[in-house]
Amino acid sequence: MKRELPSLNALKAFEAAIRTGSFTSASAELNVTHGAVSKQIQRLENWIGHKLFTRAGQRLIPTTGAIALAAQIGDAFDRLADSVSGYGSPEARHIIYVAAPATFAMRWLIPRLENFYLGQPHIDVRIRTTSMLEAALPGAFDVIVRREPPQRGRAATVHFLNETSTLMASPKLLRRAPLESMEDIFKHTILTTESRPSAWDNWLRAAKLNDRLPQRRHNFDHFFVAMQAALDGLGLMIGPLPILDDDVATGRLLVPFPDTFVVENGYVAEIARVARGADPVSIFLEWLVEIGKAAT
Image 1 (cartoon, rainbow, N blue to C red):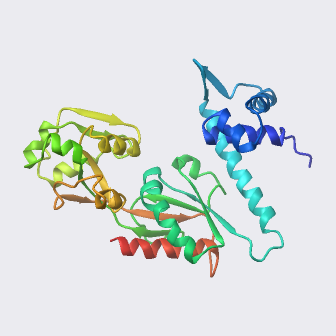
Image 2: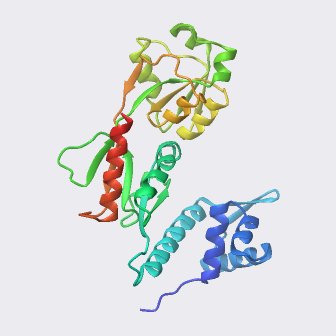
């Protein structure tokens, strides 16, 4: 069956522009001029029939649909590269596709991947910090990491990491306004997030302060944005351990009341297909379980 597809060069230019964040960076990666990237993207817009970018002053901003399309094109390029490189080569790298929450990927999984690659140099883990809606697309990923309780009887789900949440703050903030007692919390601004909406209520309940809530607050859509605000000294946050273990160990974040915490659901890996024996997905899952046990 004949496939009606746009120019491959147009797709490459568009995907690179979204992934790198600018036409200039895309042109450097593809070793072409800025004008060539712009022309290829215009060709793609003509083929699709509508604009993929909107102008804001001197900047071109990708539309929401364009960002989603670029992610799908990037995944397709990855799979195409995997198919071609693996053809007839016994030493070919095996690629597995993993969807994971952004904070988990940035603060816990990626810093530990070097250890995985030392033992499995022929397995390439491709991480996408997608929304769970995108992760639900059939065939998009081999493994989907979620925050939820382990469920008995579901062979396709593996619980690998426990999690607790506790109060955290930057050293800069606590130097400026120390927390000498629980009551001092109410002198501070708190940081809340839509992705963990009950975090403060649960922690205040554990601290036996559930009838009160600090009045000053800043709300963010994603936890990793709230985390950056906490690192910058904007307020107090409820943060997860062991996800932020490295930040605490290096002193970037402090835990004023370590004995007051909330036991969370933890993390599970949902397997999108059957994995057996020495299958790369099985090897990756066994490693996840091993390092998860070591972290708790």
